[in-house]
Length: 81
Image (tube, rainbow, N blue to C red; front, side, top):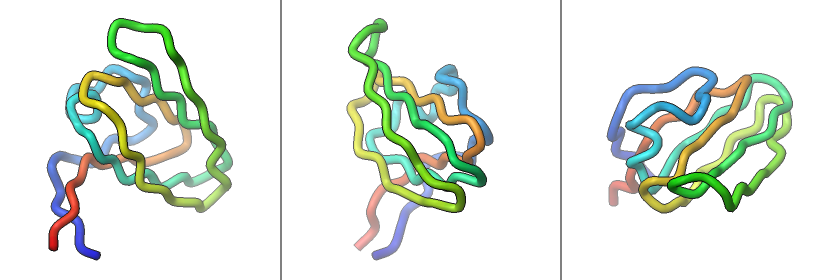
């Protein structure tokens, strides 16, 4: 599977980066054990997931939801067939 990069890598996102907020697919690479926090547009409905040190994941989300994830690099992507 190949990825199409839709924006720049965001180091230690804190929920304020527009490229991650607008994205619907994000590649996450954790440098240390961390917790990814996903918050609904307008606040509320917070969801969390633990990511182990050196772990990676691809997060599917709705546009408008914010992402915060210390100790990680996050990149907005799309699948490219």
